[in-house]
Image 1: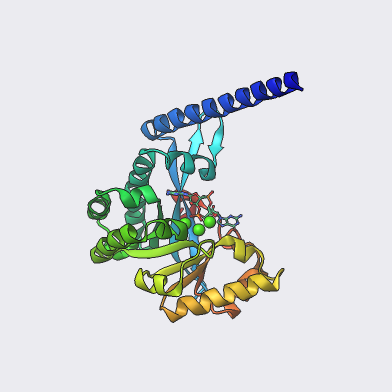
Image 2: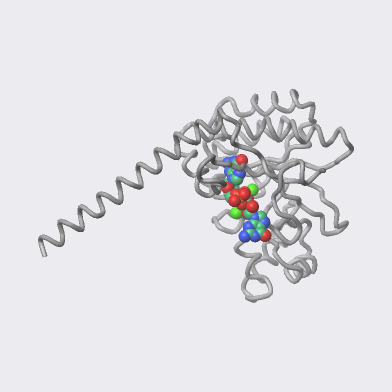
Length: 270
Ligand code: C2E
Ligand code: CA
Ligand code: CA
Ligand code: CA
């Protein structure tokens, strides 16, 4: 048994070492990717359920690795969030998406740009001036930009978030709470944060039409959000049944593979 215990220990040791080496390699590759231009923004349409028109796009970071191909953001974003790398990625996204959106606006495309902010970016004292600068370089009005912050990030440090959000609000950019329903914020907190938009997490949309619980949850989120004058967006809409239900429940906007998958600017606006 002692022998077995020892080899098992060594096995885990090797596994752990391999995992750490893979992470280190990925982090190094990611730093190179920023420099070599292997990163690019994909855009996913957000559709207004009243007019059926695309009213916004969400910019989503993509990494085309020269060897591994597409690395999913769910793999590299958490890694980047462990260091200042996320700030570099955030700055890249801000610069590139505002530039591309301004280009489309010049061609008469009138949509809002949504991008994601992580906690580390909220902690960055240069965030607000960085955003102001990017908007002015691109020649975009602040009202063209909506920053998405996850419910869990907002709740982790409500005081700091509140301060930064106040400064962003003063700048005139819009603010959204992302992945709503996965945390534990109250109606009072939502009201206090003075946001513009609430995005219902995909996990609740997936269950629409399958579980009456999901329907009840989505319904109550919409009622609650409307009570504090928030625009409600449903994410992860994958079929017409979900879309129809959301319409009936009074949801304002929707996003999902059924309405449009994330795509490069050149494909979305040929
Ligand atoms: P998120 O902000 O919740 O973005 C929505 C995710 O859902 C995207 O995944 C999108 O491709 C996916 N999605 C959209 N519609 C559907 C659908 O109908 N079905 C399914 N199954 N999925 C759908 P993606 O692009 O893989 O990004 C994952 C997460 O990575 C994002 O979740 C966000 O948290 C993070 N992320 C992506 N880009 C950035 C970025 O530039 N900055 C930061 N901080 N985070 C980012
Ligand atoms: Ca988002
Ligand atoms: Ca989301
Ligand atoms: Ca999500």
